Image (tube, rainbow, N blue to C red; front, top):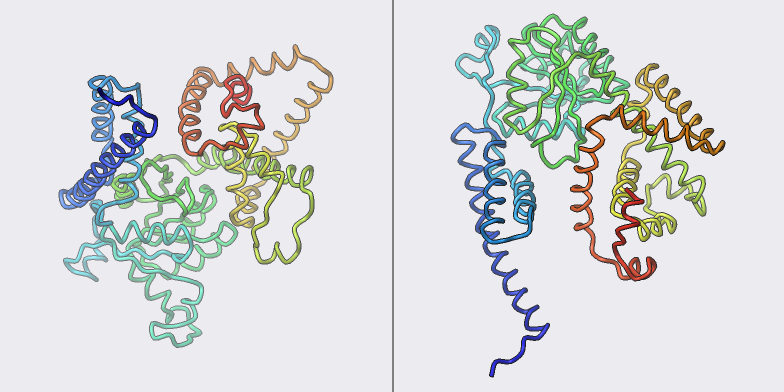
Length: 444
């Protein structure tokens, strides 16, 4: 007579199957690394949207074949794909087709490799681009503040033209300015006289109209403004947006957009003015609202102000209120709170520069504050008809994107919910249910 199955036996079998799955994943990851190396040698880019769609289509087919829950296999494949973008195989990438100028050929002969100099290359974004461009075979040098006052042997010089910085800049085919917004104009003016007329001049600043105008005024050669729409803590360029703004000689700078695409980025071309108008909403306004929200939580619910020593040393302090919020949060509010805290873990000067980069930014923020005051007045007056009318008008403004965003956010929230383990304490304080669908709808 066969023994009746037990819970412990079922769990043991589950663990054994997990072991088999892990062994197969190890084999798959090894093949992914091999494929990444082969992609580089074959001249393929870092990511192939056609291949990714084929993998996911195969996942959907496997779900039907084995009667698996819808999207289960595809969710697993997306996670594996994300890891493969981190792994990057050998770390080498295909290089775009760089067309050497006559000056380059005169100086370097048949060596057609593009020389890149990153001004501010030891900063977070500078290091990010140095790693990727070096991996694609570019010869990358770096210039920092101290390089303007010393020569290649480290000796102090008073003539900037004799400096190590001047030597590296003059050797470059492409110079990238990667410095804080507040000093970008100053650095452009300092760098431009030290580069060759055929050199491409770019910047990575989060505003574009003014820096591109400054580069065009200071430099006679090719100009291309760049704005990576991510921070230096990003693990991969794959699917990240980089904005390009043509300044001068697009035929000379076309390889830059091509290179970014080969590295996996999504490249969006626009004018400097169009870019800055969008950034007033995407960056300045959004950062302002996030910072205001965080500051309000501190002012309204902070039990005590941090000590001056803690502020100076950056010592981490436990916030009982934030900890309690997390315990009570649905996945969507956990995500929102996470995005607020993420900002406050970074450099305040950077965000101050971004928000106050132009008077237009501040004017837009003032309009937002006035709108918030009107919304508050509507609620204070208990004017439900006005509130509903405004709500409906904004729904019409979003159009089809409102429903699309609802669906997309639901899918993201499902992944967020899977990220965190069930907390027995949180479940108990919610009446014993870790997930309450009615509360989730209210939270959404």
